[in-house]
Amino acid sequence: MTVIAMWSGPRNISTAMMYSFASRPRTIVWDEPFYAHYLAATGITHPMGDEVIAIGDTAYDAVVGKCLAPLPAGAEVFYQKHMTHHMLPGQDWRWCLRATNAFLIRAPERVLASYAAKREEVSLADIGFERQADLFKLVSDHLGKAPPVVDCEDILANPAAVLEKLCAACGIGFDPAMLSWPAGPKPFDGVWASHWYNAVWKSTGFGDPRTSYPPLESRLQKIADEARPIYDNLARHRVGA
Image (cartoon, rainbow, N blue to C red; front, side, top):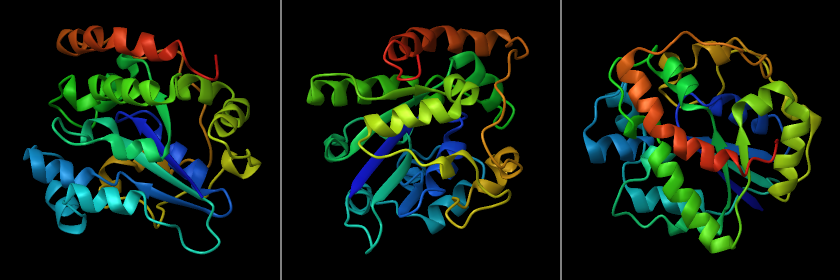
């Protein structure tokens, strides 16, 4: 069994990546396991937050146990779509060292342009860059080397090549089935999908990379400037470079 913990912030084509892995045979996926816990523990207001808490598991240790539990017979890969900011200070994150960790990154300017269209209030913490850096260091120190990093733009530019490298780095074989999926909602989508996933529901594969985005307003550009050094550091290790 291979457990893949994919760590990203929001608006990082993370749902498309989940759909990609779900298209593999003998693969199970889990959409943001710690979301309900994060909302309950922080009291932060998110779209559909009450529904997320009501349907999810809010106990951190219980979710950790499910992340590391044996898979059903016949399943070989357990892909977990994790949001980095769901890991809170003071928690023991070392459970992830029992999984194969990978990191999905995107330029902060592009993250913010997409995020701000869905949620008016946004901070550096909301987009997960600082926590992604913390988790990257934890895993790197444990391995003695950088774990696999993939950039959204590299994937969109050449999905087959980059996914093949990612799969190899995770110790599994690439399957061309990962390049497409049926349009529409998926049974493994989180309850929040109706608010956040409208664009990816229209997709049947990875879209073309956008070459430009509208300029950010000053408050968002300030956040992007704070996140940029973190992004640049992780980008040095990306497998699709």
